[in-house]
Image 1 (spheres, rainbow, N blue to C red):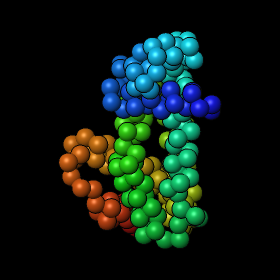
Image 2: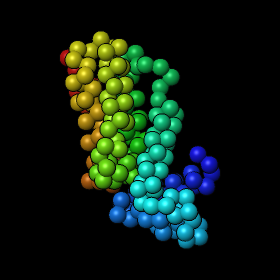
Image 3: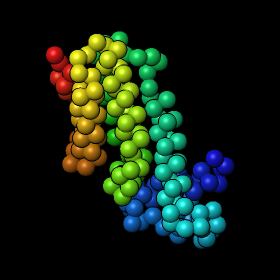
Image 4: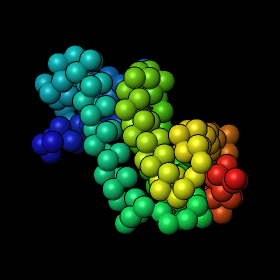
Length: 179
């Protein structure tokens, strides 16, 4: 993605994170990017094009995040998987909280926009659980993904003033995966 478009989309994600989808306007993106009024509309002629570009940038950033946060290889134990998932949740609620808030706002406005990413995550979990010899890996992968989504939502909303506890999150994942 060329530099100016990336700059605009990063500003657009910040707008969505801060103001929700209703706040996503060409003018708001121009202001967030500290660029002259009309710049965003020169690149993205209408709101549909703007939203599509924001979704594309989100997918790009998610892929980079998972690559950077992801382990070097598949987990060798349930404990290792639980620790990896807890670290990912903490990163998404901490240093990447703005991106997570934008993702949540986009998913409420356009649920289909997160379907592919959700199924990739659940598929990866299912594969990891099957590799660990876990019975009923598909259902357990969905349960763990649902738990992670719920914890993440709570860390960004009702528990935003609490210090997240990686050990407690990992313990909950282990409980979900217990025989």
